[in-house]
Image 1 (tube, rainbow, N blue to C red):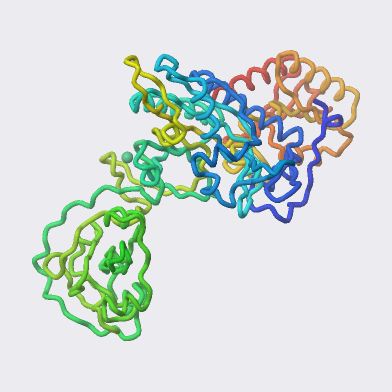
Image 2 (cartoon, rainbow, N blue to C red):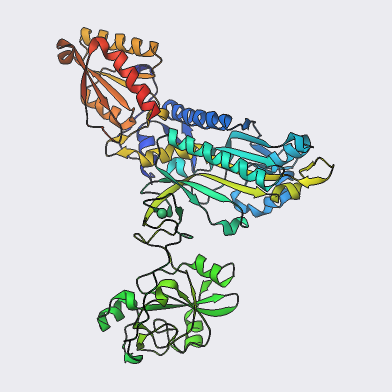
Length: 573
Ligand SMILES: [Zn+2]
């Protein structure tokens, strides 16, 4: 493709509404344009990338034995009404009426539609297992669309649904998808972690997220530096703290005046004691009861873990009035000693010796507190993990905290939809059972943006070879006849070898061409100039994360061969 005939409207200025690097660069590089809140057009370069992501996803789904279908985006309301999601989705559903007044919506996901397809067509255990997928435009009326392709109201998803006779079959289908997803993200060259999601909300079924590691990610996860343990920060665990010998030397507790100092930092400075000696005591409302949760002063309480430890669905921080009523003191002076209610203490806090905590009396703290000697509490893991904590799965690893973007999600649905919608099969004795389902999503258009969130520098995008809009960017320097001839010859030879080439043939200053080349980030750049040609060489420079600064000179007569070989090598690593 010649730039002069292409449609690559690059822009210098950052769009005012760009809130993420990928949004900024995709706009500047002329890959996408916005036509409404969370609604984007793909220009030729953007569409080439989208298609390449789709073909990797399609190839790996096919390899895993899934069968491609295409369901409509425009859906009659009946199906979502059948499962109650017509109401559950609320304002997130884009609804419309047809000329006869019938209710319709644009599909945000297709569980109901695929379940309907299967209940009509599948009767017998002999028809199972099946895995059906589609690559389809989805709609969600996001309250705050942002980040360009990261969170849109119209987006492209790959959604797959597996159908099995039993839970064991569903788990085998799930495992196949896990492998397929791993291959997809590996082929795109992404750094990612497979993260166990909070299975609580899924009713205890198997579920995991593929999180692409990027600094700008909205999700936080903790991952081991030595094994494959990774979990959302909300549910991540750490290795249990080692038992410590009981303190025998701690003097009996005593009360000290701490006038007008309530926060850990203030009391810590006032008493000249480190925060890890403090027993931070927080009051929560859990299932109608006031409960005290105690963590070490340098640790963060995790409300999800606390709720789980208490066997309730959620906990809420007590208000000032409730705290006063429960402890007799204002906020900042609560403590477990003498507290007349349930106390849950974190594993690490329970091991604190000569601890310091609130006295349940305004302007007073208690020092030299020992768990069990001075207060009784249930010992549980109720704190959020922190960078450097020991891995709960292996003996030697420690946890690192990352930010990530969810790029894929796999889970076993069980019979939630099939039971509601009566999608059943007959077993070999003629008995009827609901089909056991799994569902597997990949945000295809979001992956375009996520890749750029991971691979970029101050000059622009750094596309992995596998999804780059073109593989090689040929830049001719000057309008010298010899240069133009050499460019045309090399481009023709590369195209003959099946290499995708973008040839910048514009009558522009080299600086403009190089800036645009850096911006759109095609992974191999070839520069042909009169000076190099005179000595028989052209310059080859990778624009990749690892070696975007390393240029080499390749002999003109072998250039096509060398470049084609380099493209092949970069496709497989
Ligand atoms: Zn580990």
